[in-house]
Image (cartoon, rainbow, N blue to C red; front, side):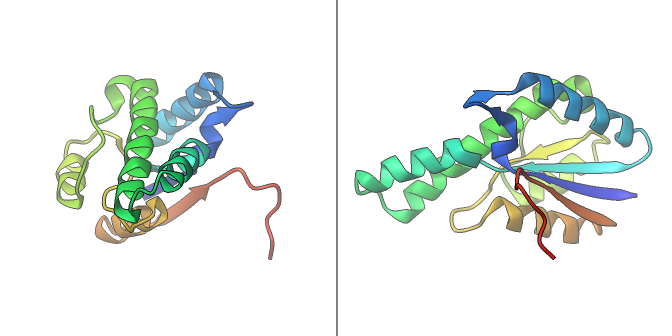
Length: 148
């Protein structure tokens, strides 16, 4: 089975600190699942990215510059997952969709952040799911409730 897991960046934090215990738990589960399934992970920027984007907006930065800051934060979050997954993960977050496709062929778990201004990490996850013909795209976030 081919899976894309989209992690909201906010789930990496607990009380404004990076929750390494939770990240290690996710890494263990992902490692186990990857023994039988091909996995791509996309990580968002979360609250930290929103804080930087707000500050940049207050300073008059253009939208594209704010988007680039959010992309960089999401890529740092991706690097945290890569570190937790150790040698099971592709060593760097891909910067383009072409690089994602090449990385998927490595047999490693590929962890991405954002890619292009004007595009959310949810859109990145959807594109990757379509490109790799994923069986499932699972969005993991920190909402209080699920509404039907």
